[in-house]
Image (cartoon, one colour):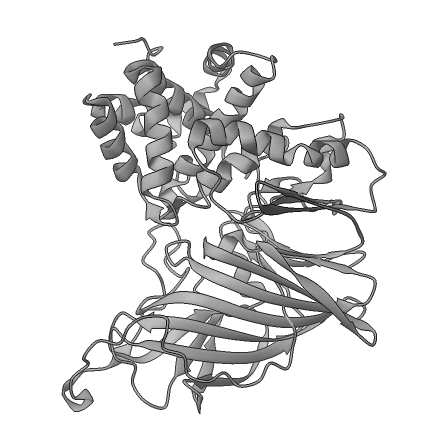
Length: 485
């Protein structure tokens, strides 16, 4: 995510993709995982899955006891009434013997739930949907849950992080946000540690565009409604999903065999946003030369004009940009930041929110690399300016352990970027760029931690780097200027 102006407090805004209502009952599909030999169920002890993924920063986010392979989401949304109806099919594998399991769902009313085609009991506790299947779910076996729901979606609010999630707009809606937002429009295991693939159908009034993640799969119109279809075949963290509904100038192309699909709201005159987004594949190709192969099946970007969105978010394959980034003219720096996240944050995702610097520090450094590539400033000069101008608060806030209040503060971004440069100076360019490419390749489509990154950096460089990372990521004083070893 790229910030605009001062400290960002809009971290929640939703990510998602919408779908058509009225999906039929799904047949049991156990392709999510090969069944193991469960043994006699009478000898097993079934228990409810955890109501959280175990993240120290956000204990109630996500859930335990299962691993999702895919979501099929079909929603219908009418902006005139602000009503959404939907059916979400979740294909997952139990990782424990479950008598019940939780999904995250905020605000919307659940009409029915089935598990493997059989009716299941369901109950709500705040933003938790508790599903009790007719029979226990055996560890190692796949299961399919189908949830029908509807209502007026509402944003999530956090005292520490602000408002986010589903936002009704002047010409449609936007679902966007970090660290939590998807649960405002579909039932989900809403934590980045459980990535899944997504197939999404979004039905909206004819004349509106409905943008989602991944590869466009076409649209069909029936009467006064149009259904837009999107498919993200690479594993995606739930906060990286998005849906944007409204009136847009849409441009399409193809690059390296992948679709390029971008949209700029018609609320803005043609100009800087269009020109900046048009350079998406140029920026992506430059980053690919440094980070390794582009990790997804589509390119693109979306520019929105809603005043509540003063940031950009790296929604997978198709980042969303607030209009404020383009008020001073063309801006490819923010495009470089969000596209860098496609490697670092989207393909290689964090396992816990404490390690958000892995996303933002590397994306910030990509901005510095792009600035050097375009002749604006060298990376070294940018580092020196950031280092000299850093506030006392920045040095007192360790990016490797920022706390919830500073999860999206300047330390995570700027000191995170400085940490990356300190590593480069310490190991030399050959080892440094090998580290970046290896990180993207070895952890592709997975989840990792700071400890994983440090271990890889030490392995590739052959150097002991614990003191460097301790000072730059966890210290509370200004580290000395990095010098080559």
